[in-house]
Image (cartoon, rainbow, N blue to C red; front, side):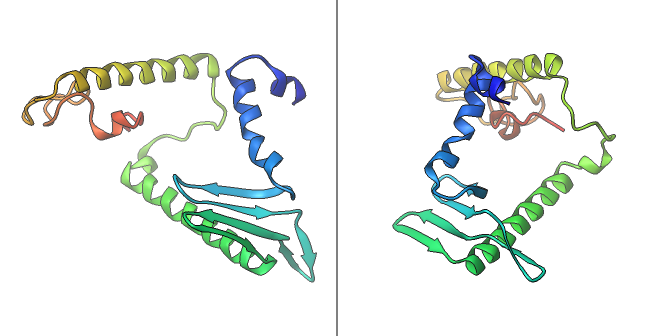
Length: 165
């Protein structure tokens, strides 16, 4: 793991950046949830009381608010965040009909997947620059990625780098 962290490449950079929240926290984080403005941290280590596992506390930071949570508030927030993630994930699966896809292993062949993802990102960036260069595009023109659909440049999924399921 240490070799991966100190590697002078994109993976090393990513691993080092993922450690920043750990360095800022006085307690080891159990979970960190963040949006564009707000972030929540559930602090460990886990404590066992009877048959319950509880965090030591937590932290909420949002516009105009910094709040420390006691163990019970932190546990309640942690459960709500986990349920929200579950709800959004299952909604995404339904919306994109992922149940219809064949099962694949969790492991990724990075020698194939990374270049493909980088090519997709590069194509998205080119399409975005081209769309920005055409200020008065007509709404009835076809998209580069979705022929037959109204709009210019890339569709909302491709602009977000998600492509089509």
